[in-house]
Amino acid sequence: MDSRTAAHVLSQISALVELQGGNRFKARAYQSAAKAILGLDSDDLTPLHRSGELQKVPGIGPATLSVLRDLIETGESRYYDQLREATPEGMLEMMRVPGLGMAKIQAIRTGLGIETLHELEEAARDGRLARLPKFGAKTAEKILKGIGFLRETVALELYPQAFGEAMRLLSGVRRHPEIVRAEIAGSVRRHREVIGDIDIVAACRSDPARVAASFARVPGVRDVTGAGAASITIRYVDGTRLDLHCVRPEEFAIAWWRATGSAGHLDDVRAHAATRGLAIVDDTLRDASGSTIGVDDEAAFFAAIGLSFIPPELREGALEVDAAHRGGLPTLVEYADIRGVLHCHSRYSDGTASIAELAEAAQRRGWSYIGISDHSESAFYAGGLSRDAVLTQHEEIDRVNETLDGFRVLKGIEADILADGRVDYDASLLERFDYVIGSIHSRFSMSGAQMTERVLAALDDPHLTILGHPTGRLLLTREPYALDLDAVIEKAGERGVALELNADPHRLDLDWRYCHAAKRRGAMIEIGPDAHSTQGLDNTRIGVGMARKGWLEARNVLNAQSADDVLAHAARRRAR
Ligand SMILES: [Zn+2]
Ligand SMILES: [Zn+2]
Image (cartoon, rainbow, N blue to C red; front, side, top):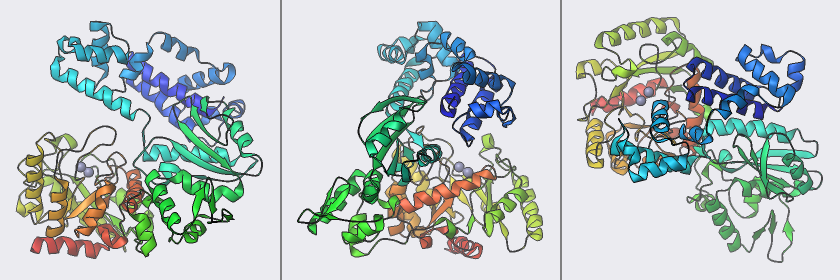
């Protein structure tokens, strides 16, 4: 039994248990078991089961183990089959419509007898849904929007999930005896924030089409497009899509470049090559006479057509070819440039770690400071800090700092930007913080004009050091709020307020597409993990990938500076 199929069955069981109103903890247990299975180092569960290793895997309990035993011994799970029989397929789809909770799904099913997404869409259009008790026209409209959203995003995943999946697939490809080299390409390599499919390029010592075909025959594959060719698309049972490009070793460099994309970038490079009398034909570079110019790697390929090496993150068809031609590419910020982080929540608000634990975790990551930025008083839903709690926290930070050598905990706050643009707390309390992040956590539905006015007003407060997650977007879930972002970026640059690139993989906000504008306007970018645990500090790495997509250099990044420089930045802002 392959681990992908097993994990898929476990997570389907979890969804079905929840849908049928079963115990939530039970549903969660199946979900964590699915995660544990995917985290294993092995694709085949059968040997692990025989040796008794499987039952020792953390996250696998007696109930989940019995499902796995069934799967391994018979290829099927009786429990899963029973659950499936009792649940119409369409209801599973409904669970994925944003804003449609379990209670509403039950009400729709009992009230209208609806069991498919299509029926639901019809009922939302013809008014039946709106007439259900407690629904109304607004809810019906929201559900209709949700269905549209689901249709568009059904195959999309956030970067970290897609990256993890890509690494698992890559290690499987690399184990193939006929493959000499394999790499991740496509949007994962370009570090896009949401990913539709995974691209892998593999150099083969024998016939590429035959090697590709051998991947189509493994367990866990639902269907294959392009069978028989050297480039095929494999869809697995859990919906994962792999575009596998098998090539000859001598074609690898250009095949890797092509499979990395983007389409716009490829067009720009082809056009540039043409100006030099060169052409890219399939996976080879040809001169005017049609003979092949050998290139060993991507750097040699770019050099051969007169361009400096373009980092994959920049390959979006946004003037990078022009810049590479002029020698004007930026020296992109790297993870190693980060010297500390400023957006972290402790147990004082809604985090899970103490200040000392966060400090220790930051030190272990090689940083020299960490700023604690819990929620402010108005964010009562997130355990926002009262005035007294702020003072207690500051005493604790002082005590922790006394025990530390060469490392510093800074006193920050993530203060709510109130509806009128005021920053939470009064000036006398704001003075006590080393720096202030101002964020919007309420009243998202203001008009664009009102929201812009609100944010611009906050930028006038001299205590504000950083504007947190500037657009409020939640990837694949919530659109950014209406806001004149250009006006905000311009004023932030003028006032010396840094803009956050919130590195929570659900946010990645400021959008990388606007980082370039921020840089031009002279606004610094703070890469904030928005950590709610010590593990959450690792969001920083994803944030750096996004900053690179936004053409940022270390000198554009606030937390690539020392603690002293960060403090000086905040102080300068207050003095203005
Ligand atoms: Zn926030
Ligand atoms: Zn936060």
